[in-house]
Image 1 (cartoon, rainbow, N blue to C red):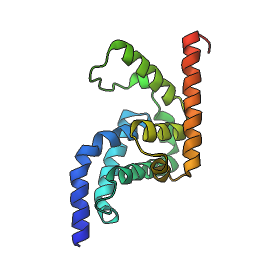
Image 2: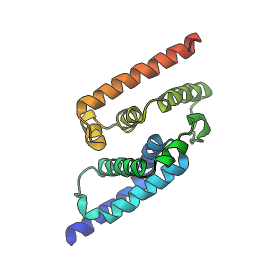
Image 3: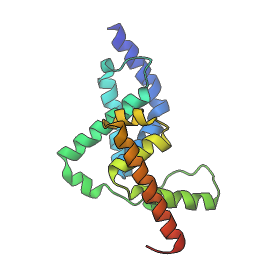
Length: 173
């Protein structure tokens, strides 16, 4: 009983701090603000419900991201219709801007647009490693794939984004 209380206490303390990152990951998975809200909230509820399965002192962020990934995959499997309406162009999503200059915002918007065009598996891998700072091994564990798959996805994603950015620069398509 004490272990469950300790786990739940740590989860409750960590959720407000980790929620923005969890929501961002949910947005990358779903490409929809509404779906991201639902997924992040569902993950928080599941985390509190499954607190006994969390080991205090371990990486709560990794545990939550893995849980979000599983919930999202379950949603995709059970509601194929949801996937068809869930994609939105990055330009249509009003992300808060803390203040970088206009040129930086334009470049970031272009890169995010190219990343959002990647397949879901590559988007999730890019987000976990390059945005959230997880190691390849941690990302592989969260997404439940071999580390080589993460490396391959990242390599392919880097190449695709780079080629798309170069095509945009030279005006070819």
